[in-house]
Length: 273
Image 1 (cartoon, rainbow, N blue to C red):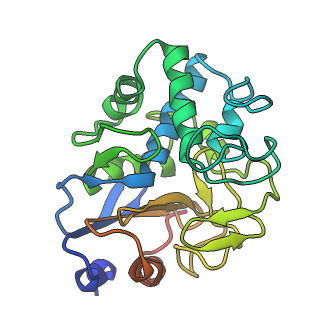
Image 2: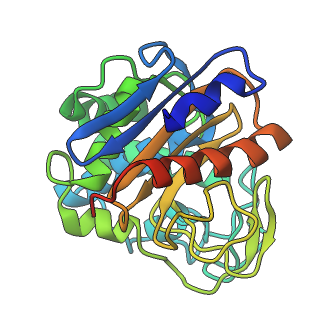
């Protein structure tokens, strides 16, 4: 049975999904070539662009950026102390995990200054063109303003599973490594987490409960979900990734459906790790 068949029963108007291995899509269901808003999955693309800038020497992870005491690393890992929206600092950097759209907007502005390009152009040059993304655009916030397709996100997932086309493998390992371990905070949609672990732009599953991935996902699983009903996770232990895009806002339906789909995918597809 197709593990992705469950998306046909989701209470959404349109859904597409893919299972991804290191060599590309292992299974696809739904209109994978139709663009949909990514919402906060945009942050993964912004993080990749930032890490390209780090590799190019335009910025450094530990140079000051944002509020006093904050760095590029703090902004990427939601540890800068900025409030979720606006530019108000509500905590000292490195003391709390505050999920912040504002932090990613500050990061994008910082990258604009460092590269001399508007962020949408830099994202296109640094990520979209090298990965061969054909339907990915940023028309709004660097935190949540991108549109893409399942087909394009499959290419992103392949890079995260088998780095080298865009980023050095060591850089991707850093993206998926907890930054500022032990910080508590709220995981949007899933409540307070004692250890709300985050990497460099990617959320890390670890022992979080409840969570939007499945019980079969390893603690090393990393990725992001978006309020527009979208997600991308990568499980490096299984050597698999899963992408899903919908046209329906995240809600209780997704909190139930996504973990079940993730478990079905991991049960149906042999590990590639």
